[in-house]
Image (cartoon, rainbow, N blue to C red; front, top):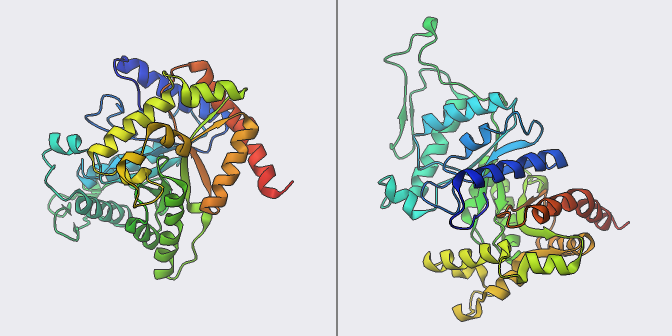
Length: 359
């Protein structure tokens, strides 16, 4: 979900976000992850699954991914049933991206600001998977006892009552968790549970690289070999026909959406006490973190050849991974934004494959 500039009409940004997914589908992108927030006027998709449902017919090939469904925001039985129906609507194209829900104002409006949303998340995904695996009357109680699911008192199978739906994909859709912290212990659990990690676009390469070892640790704990194909990494990328255009729109221009995005991220992470995400070394003082340096570290921009070279160098820092997730941003200039996606699909990725093969 792009971070849109303030004051833009909501219908306009929703239409733009739909157009981005439709274009990605036409260009052969593999999947589209859409986030959700209830109380953010700049990241303003309130329900990722509802938004994605509008694309089922207009983007018929691309996998449609919640990026993420915030599991502390709804009862897990609701999420399980709605995700199962969505998987059927898409013909089995759902990727089920999940998280606790990180935005404090979302939690406050729902009355859960002082609750342990990580614990709510763990309970919720446990219940969702048991619903999909189980049969009525279910009789599920989550680990902490927070959630219980049963239809024992009201079930009537001859009438078809008391049965929760299962997804089309068997045994379940792919489950993906976004990773936003270096050395994340959550990635170990993803490995244990066969969930797949997606490393956030605002993490420096050296912090992204810490995720793979944690995933391997989780896989080894259950006697399974980790596969790099299961690891996604998001990056902030802008491709243009000329280096000058790439540098201006992707970094230097006052109206650059890339500059705006990281200016907002710096403010958010400072407020949340997570400025360390942008530090090259944990001992660095906060004053070392400037907007220009963050743009240098985290925006990959240039001509197709330059971007391909930067992506190959990035993979040398992180190690092999399965999928590059192209981060969406506000379309300040629709022509340049569309052209970047086109160049990414038609020129950059073939070059990356050629450089990676040594050809």
